[in-house]
Image (cartoon, rainbow, N blue to C red; front, side):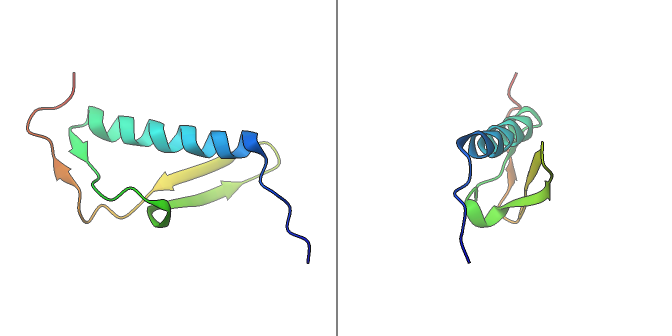
Length: 68
């Protein structure tokens, strides 16, 4: 079985989605506190798109004041 390398564009798209997700959490005043590969799941892959989500909010907590 030959394993193909993941294209750089796909990796960048996944990273962008992760950073956007963390930014959204912060805008809601939430801190995840456990961002790591095990807590980022690929939920959809097609020829032209990729969707990743952040999971495991067990250590998440509210910020003292939401980001403006």
